[in-house]
Amino acid sequence: MIGYVTLGTSDLARGAVFYDAIAAELGTGRMMEWAGAIAWGTPDGGAGIGLTLPYDGQPASVGNGVMVALEAKDKAQVDRLHAIALANGGSCEGAPGPRGDGDGFYAAYFRDPDGNKLNAFVMG
Image 1 (cartoon, rainbow, N blue to C red):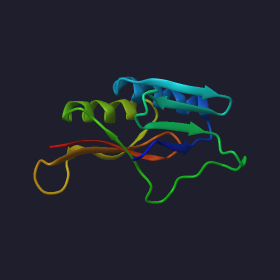
Image 2: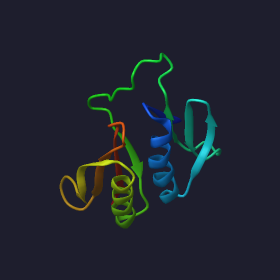
Image 3: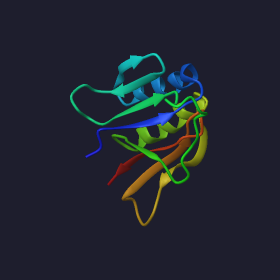
Image 4: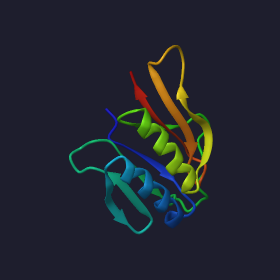
């Protein structure tokens, strides 16, 4: 259903370091790139993520309650993605661990260097 998600940045070069590292762990890379924006994903139509300087020239801002969820292959990858995020200028919004009732949902929450909220998760 989702084709891609775009997040704003105030510093594309700094954001690129963060998302290059996250994408590498997820087994993908840059799909498109042009002045002011970079997109990561696969050209086969899978969902991707873009990072852009705002078109209107105004400062990038974070949506309250907005979050991008990145599907991991297992709990160990959730743990690695959280560590990669923090090592590349991100901040912790919730350490890796089970959420809700039982073991059905395992997730870690973090923000990118601009404050956009993401999580890495695995179901089951």
